[in-house]
Image 1: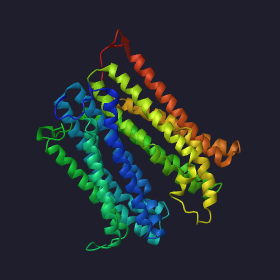
Image 2: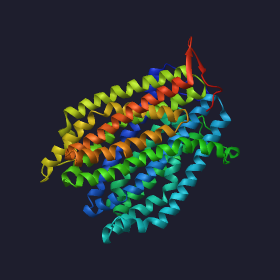
Image 3: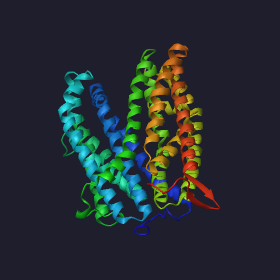
Image 4: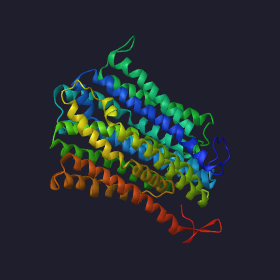
Length: 471
């Protein structure tokens, strides 16, 4: 397994250049997906404010699916990477297959619960008349396609875990390009295509997921992946499924916590002005783009560190973690300087000065970005530390640091500074930034302490400190 069909040698190659080559395809794919999200929002916005509102109401469902899908991807990636590092061909194939089976099961559960609960959910969120109908048209199609979406995430996790990030990039890029092409055709009915309105955006998304999934399956069937999907592997192995969930579920909860925190931040900001809410929305969008390098480096960390951990190359585990941290902090520091110096031009990408409240939104947005930029380096540090824990099969630290970051610090601290200390909007921004600083420092210190406690360096040889190795 270790030498079969491998483009990058994650166990013996030079760590620095191998790691960068591993991360770059992931970054490119994520940038394309971000472009798709912007393009998708643009085309839907051409349908009017009701369509925009309808898309907004589907956000909780989308966020939940993204969180669960990303968790599956992380869990599968971690288990496949460690199995490959151990040299266990059978286990890596079983891990990948069980990841696919798990994704089908979760997708079907999401489909059934979505069809049952979509009407009450939309009514609960206040959807009425035309907005209700448009929301339902859109989300029903998305819900029906959920099993495909979760399989898509699992395939992506398999490729990343084995270090084939170029395959991952090809799958994600093809899906994004397909979506960008189909969006205007199906929304507006260009040429022979039917005019489907907002439902067209959903159909385009479903088709793009399907095309990406089929391309990923073709890579496996053609032998471009080192993973083999055979009949004998299509059996539930609960130990492997628990191993995937052990890493993946905390990651899902961590991503879901972001959406939960946004609800409170929007509520706090709305107490002061609608312009503050708009500024937060725009600033958060810039944040999500800015942290993409950290996400890519984290995904590369899971693959490379995970394989070396499985192979018990603990000397390389330490070096991979250290270099990944340095890369993440350096890149995020550079982006922080860019955002701190040029907040206004970045905000103007999504805002028109012709709008009557643009000046106030810019004022709050500039304040938000400059304060948040001060925490970017710590976000990069924390993302690599959490990915390092996930790589060695430890999901609990991610859950704990995230829970403290958002529920103990971000929400209460933002409220305290805004209302009790009378810092108003600025207090909210400071509370969010402070929670990011905590996240980075504690995650980094925790992983380092865990590594030192469990392993010791002795004349260049790495030995277990406290008993037998346990995956």
